[in-house]
Image 1 (cartoon, rainbow, N blue to C red):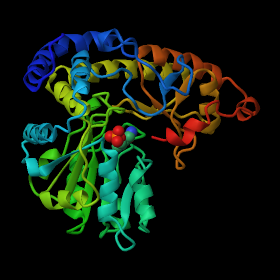
Image 2 (cartoon, protein in one colour):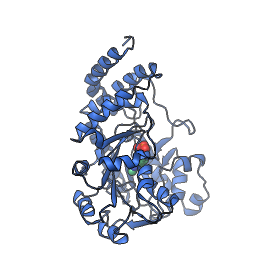
Image 3 (cartoon, rainbow, N blue to C red):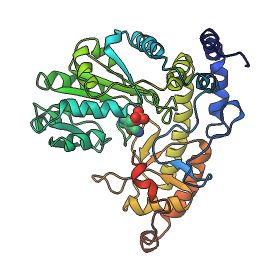
Image 4 (cartoon, rainbow, N blue to C red):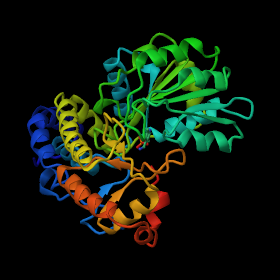
Length: 398
Ligand code: PMP
């Protein structure tokens, strides 16, 4: 398309791009991890060799749809404009898509800020944080930095949240963090368990439900409860199934008074490319079902492989799982990186279960070959290895 980009043309192209998105999405996902939109090849990290399978930080294996990339090219030309009205308009559309009012929703550059600001707003030296363990620890770090006590309640044997133990740990906590599905296990949290928590915590304690991975799973969202004025914040991100981790788009839904407490910690303009990318991909009604199915297919093949090889894993419904390596996971992570496969990390509570993100079918084929080779290695050889990309360990602790 060579139309000059003025506002009217831009909007028209948005509609056209959205209309052709489904077909392109299908073909681009079939080649997930391969050359992406507009003939531009996808690139890996600048600081590891290009052939390394990146299964370390729960990224989606391919980029946004060609229609979304197209709109971002057009938008980049007008990068001098803040286009704040576009963000306000999209806030309304997103809220309506959840049957919420615009004052129930705020857009952020990803969901990290939402987690950060929520922990800042609702924990203190006198108001604790209660979470599961293992789970995504961002709220732990923020609460600790505020001098708040952090209660880490182990998952039950069936990987469900022990809500009774969570409330018993501190019935008057400032914040309960629930990750649904849970990172790193990939396992869903029952809606009835979240409803029980909302009904049994003290009035004024806030529940944050992080639905970063919900689209991959059959877990039930609780966003509808936001409209029922619960002490509830629900965060969503476009970093996962919408493949926008580097583009940054997320949103929080909550009662207006809770939202105001988050705004206290900062309000910023959004990248206009990210807003349009999110908009085009949200309008693509086939994106979620196609990507969910493709991810499930790759996950099931990986699980079949592990089962046949005699390894157990968490029954994940997402783009990551934990595998029981039957010995410490850290040296195995190092050894796999030497075999050009970067997987995630371990959690202190489960040192023998590193997390593996699910990439493209080609990435997972590399994982399978490397995993079998590494698992044959004796402990002394494994332990002698150091990670070949040590500079990534901290910055990529996602
Ligand atoms: N929540 C969970 C459970 C995550 O795993 C992550 C990052 N991987 C985030 C939130 C934050 O991601 P982002 O800021 O990209 O939305």
